[in-house]
Length: 464
Image 1 (cartoon, rainbow, N blue to C red):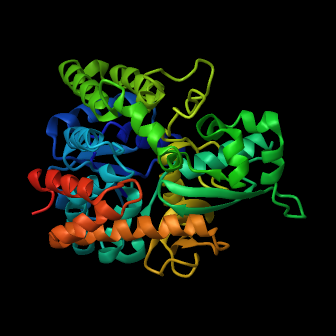
Image 2 (image 1 turned 180 degrees about the vertical axis):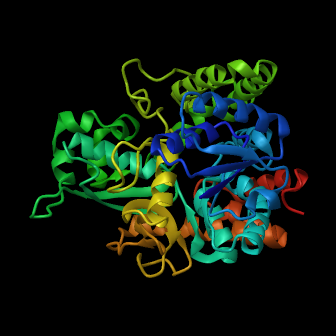
Image 3 (image 1 turned 180 degrees about the horizontal axis):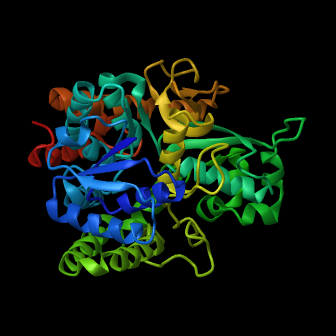
């Protein structure tokens, strides 16, 4: 089986390779492609360090061109970052300077990221259709739902978007209830970085929703990470557990104020850290794995620290833990999908589960970004939604979802409209579509601000 990883010089690629190593499959061949040769060489050294001592480690090669990477691929992992971390840093700073959220996937930052990424993602989809039309594309590229929907316009349902945040939430809630997440089922509904866990059922014959038990248990609810973010009272008021990225909607003023108070947003920290890592690892390839592990630990400990007053996660908490109170903010949660193989965490574990199920393994149920079809009322069939889906040799098939609450559906519809306006602007160059995308996003509270955001994107050549 041949796997092409686009963005193969990316910092998180070793996480994918670790999952492949753990799978024990000796017949996997990995081809890395990246526009930055130095980054590609550094990650190659990290992977060599990970493979050391493994007799049947997946073979790794690199391809200088996109077409060479795609030729004959069975699966394509798309994990690209168009504009690099400098683009992310610029997006965050422009938004914060205008008094609105500076975050790479949610709000104006996500729109700007999408505008420059969608044309590249669409080109990749066209080359996949030409060179490996039977391959499945597993999209890691953010904003994941938006990019997946854009690529589906070329490749249809052979593009599956993944995110570990909802599956991590499911695992944490299952643990709080004393359930094995591999045997539990979860009622989750939403879009990428915009969803709600509405129910949990164990393997008991009565199939009772156990989430109310968690909400009524002070100690169990207090131990949940999402309680650190939203507070127990708000979770109980909602009657469900929100995806951590909904912090930016429910506590928007708090988030903007806390992030703006820091000397530099997340993108600036990552730019400095990763530039230092790649330079050091290029100079001393023999230490590449050690340096990557050190940088990874620091990255995890400080994830969203700018929204917690610059403080690292509390000692003794899991890697997903964070400080309490409304200044807390999301991080990339670990965990696999609903009823996914136990013990596999992170987005790399979700991706591996998708590959296994499609390649002829046992069908698996996971929370994925997939074409709606008729699974969720209130959004059309072509909308990419984030729902539990059964994955088998024929692809991913979303399970029917109960209708969401009006407040949930309204927010989903508004953000979906923004996603589609962003796709229109990116594919046609329409300034009008881009302006509407910025102005209609619920986290941009002024048409005047939207015009200034558009002007910044036009200056950066993201709208031509």
